Image 1 (cartoon, rainbow, N blue to C red):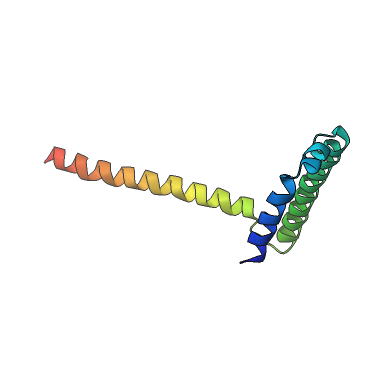
Image 2 (image 1 turned 180 degrees about the vertical axis):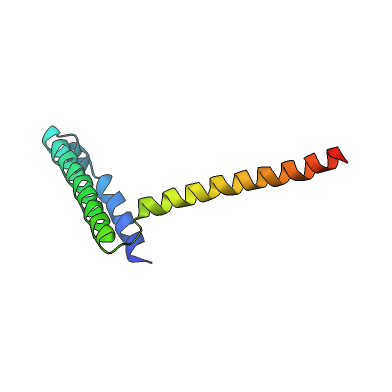
Length: 95
């Protein structure tokens, strides 16, 4: 059994304990959990900003820029396919 699976199973057992359920309903615990989640999101955003700054400094493409390039490429490929289709169907209709 993998460590991840073991941790998930153990976590499920703990969550089924009535004492834990009561504790999770405590507003103070809920507030602390929300703060922890907000902190994690804030740290993730700061990390991504730092990575983007380093990437720009090193003249590297960021993940966001790569996504934009992929989106543009898909758009151009669709336009090319449409032009090819028009050319083949339009050319056959003229003959």
